[in-house]
Image (cartoon, rainbow, N blue to C red; front, top):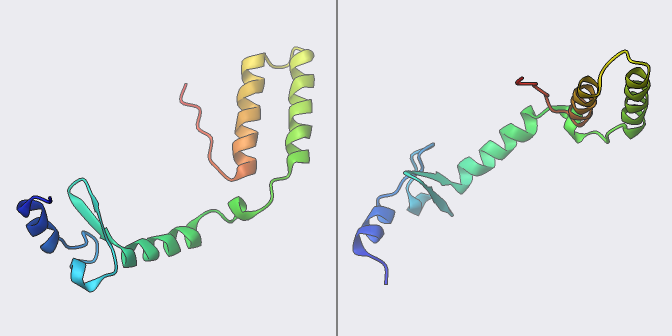
Length: 106
């Protein structure tokens, strides 16, 4: 059986983003000390879809990644770069291909 304090808290709950109460929306999702309603979730999804890098929606060019890997292996084999550098460059190329930023924290 639900605690009466929990029931009272839910009755008074409001979306932390738009301020609408649970009776004004279809769904109110509780987080640690915050709430978000289904309307704000939909708005957020629209913003993310609109603002996400359009490259993430494209089919990756795996041939380009393979060519980059071949070049890096050749450079490594010829002593132009060491294995660690080749690995980091390949990872950065893969992140770029998928539309993400790669930051080397070292």
